Amino acid sequence: MRHHAATALMAAAAWLPAGWADAGNAEIVADLQQQIKRCWILPADVAAWTRPVTLIFKLNRDGSLDGLPLVERQEEFAGRGAVFAMSATRAVKACQPYRLPVKDYEIWKDVKLTFSAPGG
Image (cartoon, rainbow, N blue to C red; front, top):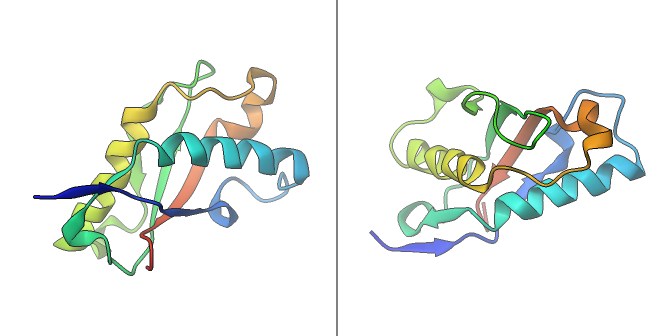
């Protein structure tokens, strides 16, 4: 199976609990997205997958995962969709520990991040 690095979009809109989205926090979101993007290798046969997948996960203060990422509405993803979701999950696991500002831990400890394939 051929793979290529994804130049994926990760939507910040579905990121963390409402009420914290200000300009300072947008920088934290962008930083986390960039770190994950470097680790995301999208299988070529799902590169044109059109449905975004949302992962929910918790981070420890040191930037490591606290448990495994969960796929939101996982029952809706089968076949190529499941492969797409697994590629996003692998990226989240592979990139840890994340380098994020410890002083802002309360902001980034609970993550909800949406992944979309290029052109999806």
